[in-house]
Length: 167
Image 1: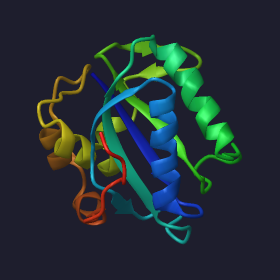
Image 2: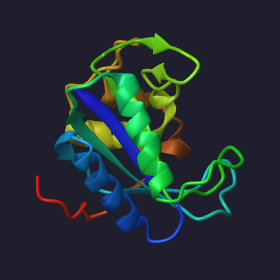
Image 3: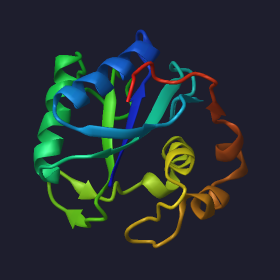
């Protein structure tokens, strides 16, 4: 299984994420589950617009580098401009875990190097795949959520809104 996390904090955030998921489906990803939307403050500058994130559980017949290439094309097609680190963005698509593969290359690190520290990654994973465990740390999402700071655990809001896509 493959875990992706999609985020947006510019423009029509809900639509941006929905469009990105539709483009992933067109790129031959088989989406199995999609989490609710989760909202968090921007980091590190909380004066910037809040982020919306969703996690998706998916499968893909090709390799991780092919998937990364498709993701970069989708982000570009949607108008993402890579400027300064942590700047607001229309869409951000991260490969959190690709079939438990561990990899460190110039273009891709698997699993995502900070996934175990991010509330907006862990809560969606817990919702859609509570059997998942980190490929390197061998800890599940529930355990890692409990290791987050109190602030990180309370600043995330699970919205009662889902991506409007029929699976």
